[in-house]
Length: 113
Length: 112
Image 1 (cartoon, chains in turn orange, blue):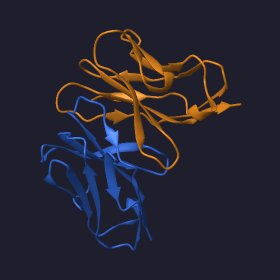
Image 2 (cartoon, rainbow over the protein chains, first blue to last red):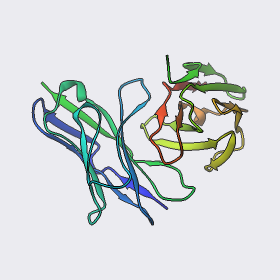
Image 3 (cartoon, each protein chain N blue to C red):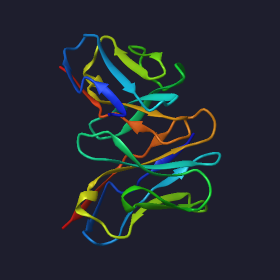
């Protein structure tokens, strides 16, 4: 069965600095990887996905993620953090076949002015 | 226009009651989902429907029954509510099960 791990409960970064939110996964086949963001009292919003192709994926709001097959990782990055990026970030993975999307436990990002 | 909408936004009820949450999407998507987010923000899939057919039913008590009258709607009915059912329930939709999902705003259910 597929699984995903977000090793950090909380990431703090100063505004203007680069940010990284970590994600590792486990699947039996080829992974379908996603990042979502959740602001307080809102539903999740899609940021970006990796299905196939270039390992560096660019998404919404200046975010990008790098797929690393050997390390089974899909870390979320942004070159310059904004205070408005402060939110809860979820990594998710699904396997091929009739399998559900499995979410990580979430990482709370706090960008300090 | 709201892409995925849910009603009600808040639901407060007594143990043992029966309640329903409605979900509608206007994106023309084929696949719809129900998720439960607990107080620790852990998100878990409950059900997935594709073209009105149930395709995923994760170990959810049979007190929970999804109903899809058409491709644009997926409602969730809960019988005999328990304290542990208190959570935020999210509806979502996607073009297919391999595409990104669009989430509704959530329904906060509180069982007293």
